[in-house]
Amino acid sequence: MPRGRGLLQLRHGRAEAPATLDGAVIRLAAEAAAHEAWIALAACACDHAIALHQAGRSRAARSRIAAVWPVLEHHATVPLLRMLEADGLLPVSTPSKT
Image (cartoon, rainbow, N blue to C red; front, side):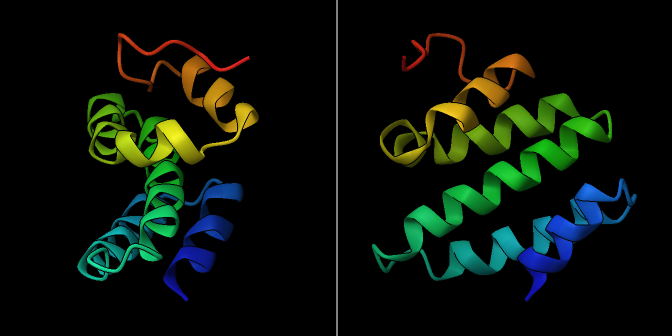
């Protein structure tokens, strides 16, 4: 389960977290033709974006969020949106949920 391993790596500040989560996003994106996979893909993309941001790759992190924004806009939790906003990872013209 690459996402689980990537989340553990992210929580422990391991340098390989972005690469592990990138692989998980790629695998989920391949399955994204199935509507059920979209929310999982968006959640994994958020984890990957956070790992990229922590690794100093904020531009890549913003790009990852932008790619799944149509799903996140409707399904992300308020705490997740606030965290992404605090890190400057949300699309520029995005109003925050309250």
